[in-house]
Length: 313
Picture 1 (cartoon, rainbow, N blue to C red):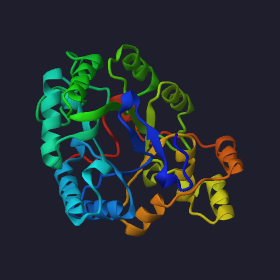
Picture 2 (spheres, helix red, strand yellow):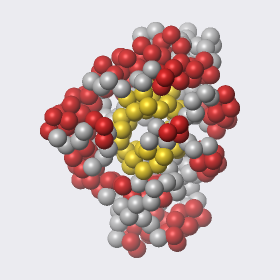
Picture 3 (cartoon, rainbow, N blue to C red):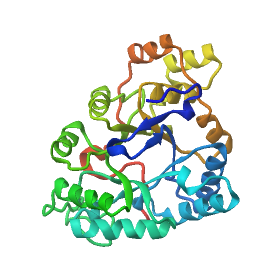
Picture 4 (tube, rainbow, N blue to C red):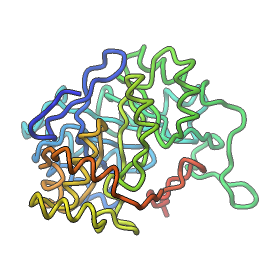
């Protein structure tokens, strides 16, 4: 990890020589298109240079327009921006992977994305329906394709220059090990729920040992109960250091060697979440030893159905 006085300057090296990833990223899961466009513009003006998108979010076109406006305004150049999007579960069959990325590129108004992730390791029945269900109303899984077959198709996208790196999301360590064992092109990024109540130390250590960036989503707990920003240990550190609890939790994430994604439509919160600086070592140790709550907020790693993403009506 390249050290930085301001943690928003931190970058993490990517596998296979794909450059470095800004550790502090902005997530684009904002359902309202007007709010999303405005938030992305504020994020880019604030200094965020890492945007995380997904086919599933159904707003890649909005992200594309916000980026286009920022490019035209001179806020940021395309080559200085890291854009990641994700392959959804209904497109896991190898013949669907390339067309899925092409469709995302068109919506994003880009010639390439920096990163392309398998959104979850669960394949759904192929088709236009994002959430196909069986006769019992349960997810209709596709048993005819393996994650390794999908990964091979992802590797070909790197060969073709459609993305600079590939990775995985919403995956447990055991499944990640299966891909690492056979990959021709190693996963550069693994994106998972990760925060002080779900630190994923074993996964982080495995990723670091294999040159993989662990990218934390919901680093502040997605505003859900139990609220991470209400944790007494975090609040005490924040008061002692004259910072917000959110800034403490986000600084902890970067200092331990992971990248993170924050999402907000509030300009003040966007700027606050970007302006994070290092914690003293005693605070880092308190975060590891004194926080007693352990909690997973999203069951997507067990079902392939992201609990944070509202289904389109």
